[in-house]
Amino acid sequence: MVATCQKTIVHSGALDCKTDLDIIKNRIRNKEQPWLKQFEEVKSLAVSGNHAKAFINSKNADAEMSKIDAKRAYANALIWYFTDNDMYAKQAIELLNAWSVLQGFNGGNDQDKLQAGWIGSLFGAAAELMRGYSGWSSEDKKKVQLMFKRAYYPQLNNASTWNGNVDLTQIDAMINIAVFNEDRTELILAIERFNKRIPSYFYQSSDKEVPSIDGDNGNVDGFWNHPIKWVDGLTQETCRDNGHHAQYALASALHIAEVAWHQGIDLYAENQKRLTDAMELLALQVESGSMQGTCQNDTTTHGVFDTWEVGYHHYHGRKGLKLPFTEKVLKNKVRKIGKSDWNIFYETLTHGDTIN
Image (cartoon, rainbow, N blue to C red; front, side, top):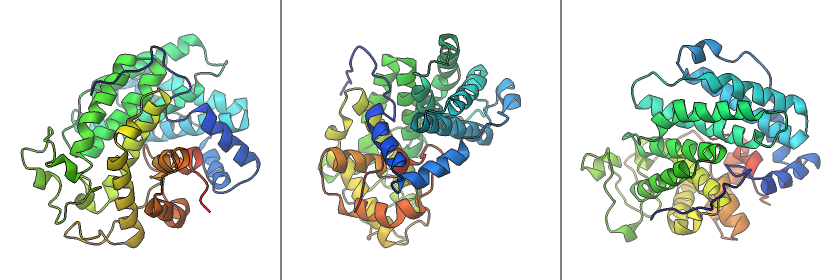
């Protein structure tokens, strides 16, 4: 399917939208949990500090330094929106402007593509949130847009042939940046990539066979890490590390669908069974500690991330679907111990719904 979108990009319309953030802003003012707890955690990240000028000017987007600054930029943008405190807006803009001189990534392999995805998704979402701030000059915004085209597009627009979480992370960054850049061509490219990757990552028996994709070397069973039971909701990386990387991939897929939704494109509906099956199976596995007979190693990964929230927000919150295993893992694990890492950034704060 070739995506179509409105002639005008909707703002603020990357991962976060004004309607949702205003609801959460009111919850924070009312000191409601779990939003207040995550608000305080994100606020602690929203501090000023020396950005990585040495790495930027040497054309080396050092992963760890970029991660720190991208998290700071997004944290400051969110806290500014929730508090209306200009200090946080100025700190977010300082970071975005500092990175506008970045020339590119120089690792020379697919790790560059992954890092561009991880970091670009955060910088893209942060920039889009700050778009409406009157203190950010048009000239500086343009410099950031040009930086994204110069440094990020070359790494994002060529799909990695590694495991599918990398491609989905790239697409996550592509679509967030496309909104900020008002780049409909990039937006459509991201959605076309999503449509190609999704059936090759999230299994559905109705497909009859898993579509081949670059990187599988014609060996689907090997690429999917030799599952012993193929069930709807299985992912290409379920048996790679028993749900660890699958959480990253699922988060990215849901981010992409959420951004598209804000732009009037309903990827959620087109992939409802595929995505909800994946959410429910992974939630059951993580909550139960058992891979439910899908993999040779039946012990679930110990790593739990702040995933599921974006999808639950849509499918349950907007559409009223019952997702019992997702609800259970959110209540019992994600909101208690779920980690925010790389492009999975405090999703309970930005998209968490009420679970009684």
